[in-house]
Amino acid sequence: MTTFFIIALVIAMAGSAMVLGPVLRTYFRGHEDDPQPGITVGTGVIVALLIPVAALVLYSRWTNWNWSSGGVAATAQTEEMHSMEEAVAGLEKRLRDQPDDVQGWQMLGRSYVNMRRFDKAAEAYGRVVELTGGDNVAALADYGEVLFLSSTDGMAGEAGELFRDLVPRAPDNPKVMWYGGIAAFEDGDDEQGTRLWTRLLDMNPPDAMRQIIEERIGPAAAAEAPSAAATPSATEALEPVADGAIRVRVSVDPFLAQQVNGSVPLFIFARGAAGGPPLAAVRRSAAELPLVLDLSDESAMIDGVRISDQDALTLVARLSMSGSPRQQSGDFFGQVSYSRENGNEVEIRIDQVVP
Image (cartoon, rainbow, N blue to C red; front, side, top):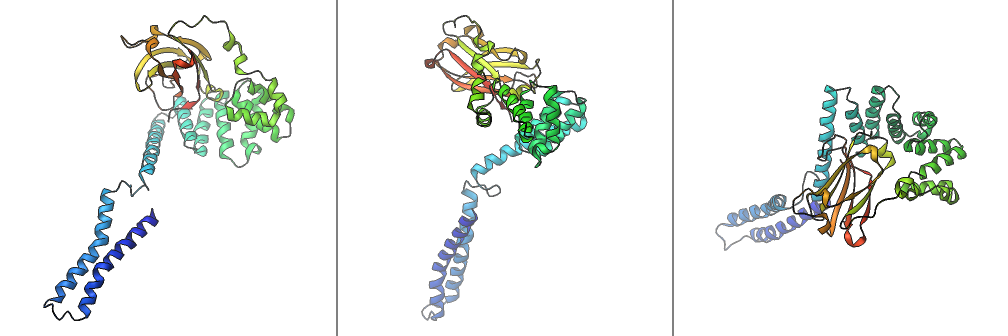
């Protein structure tokens, strides 16, 4: 943007020179035929000076560039960041008044993780550990994770000590398996690391994580781990899908799951492909995950609107951390676009966090 500004200024000054040059040449030749050469020169000087000024004023007034933030795209990004910072500032203020609010500190920690401010996230999760007396494994795992991400020591520092201690205490915690495996490999204990990561594959981790695990422990060991499709919850006998209904399989990212207790409400709903209010909705709880359910005309929320008549929908599963049916910052969610021509079954994985 600075380069453009300089080029525009040079062009404006060149235009000024084109106006002022002939005037000055005429003036210095004596302007014998002009009884008032001073007026011509004065007018030329004024016009010449006004060209760059007018160009800058008009551009700054009518251009879509935001001078304070660096551009239209940057404006939207800046506004979004400001919105996040304002929300965090409001949460921090609330926690100053309610310093024992464990859920508030957890939400603040997640917010700082989303903002990539891991040092501040460590402070928030450290407060959660303090308030829970060091007995909450999920809180300890969250704390260890941000310590690892905010430190240059890797597993040689406090994070490594924490996860080495957590492995025997919480052998089934996905986050403990992941970071405990990293610590084991850094210690040269490949057997322990392979054991932890092989078990982690049973829990169907995100694709990027699965790729890292398979590259580290080898394809043979990875092949021995059953896929999520082979788990009892996914293969249990189910009634055939009713005509017009949609069978929805809902799962949650194992690392998000560790931050949710069983009483957290789970909302599954369908919207029209173009948006608008929910056409159908079902309420369950986090304790039921992973689950399989059918959205049918019986789930409809609007009279006269039938799920069976919809060829395309947006399906959303949301864990409401606040307990509210309305989406709130800090909620966990997943969504998919559904087209009836692709069949009557769909999978939703809850793996995102509302900013």
